[in-house]
Image 1 (cartoon, helix red, strand yellow):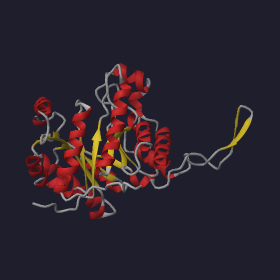
Image 2 (cartoon, helix red, strand yellow):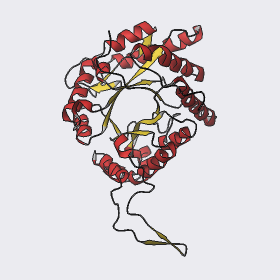
Image 3 (tube, one colour):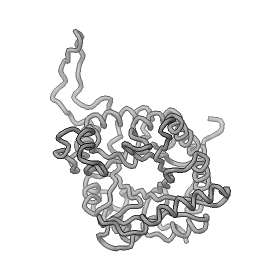
Image 4 (cartoon, one colour):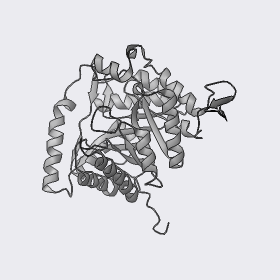
Length: 347
């Protein structure tokens, strides 16, 4: 079976894990994975965002560093939960990172209330008025306006700083031309999908969706993708990226196979249970290359996506991650009709 829609890009998504007492090592290993992904010809490296966990809290900072260790690949975030961010400051940070990367940034954003925090913790992190924070889509709209260069103030005027006078700008600086056209939205419901489409954004879908059209995950996610394109100004040309956890076992060592199986087994109760929120969680794609390809090639949602974002498991070792990247880039990707972009050795 071949893909109905050409697979334009193949990228990976990483949580950037680290040990409590040695975070620098984990950050450096992640940067080396980005370098390795570029060597393999993958199209992009993306990061998750985590707060108060042993994962990456600052996507813009990390991707700015990754931009200095790579030359070609997209640098994405899937996704930045904007409730923790100042819209103004996030626009500044993303613009700086994009300029440092030469225009390779692919920021994914989301809205919503802080999840998993007790009231006292949320108050300490977000302030005493955290319940009154705007967590609607208007938050993303303000970020987009700042990135596009919409004036947050009137005409430029002199600002006195320590006896010196500096000229202000009427827009967020530095301005990153084209960044607004590379903003993605992580949507899980029809409502957020339709909003993202109306804004002309790109759509990120992952292993979480909602029961709105079907209790079958694949059917529900395909309906979400179709609805996005039906409401987007670009129609069928609107870009969708799908993400799933891939755990290939071909050419893995016995120890790796054992770790991989234990990881998937521990997650199966969560991925197989119906969530109280109405969310559906897709099972991890684990097994031989043949088994993984059979799953992907028969997925309605995967067939409809333009890009595939293979999600690295959370708690593996650096060598495990290299194994997964190598398998996806050299075996799984080409079997899906994708071709690597390899760097000219002379360059």
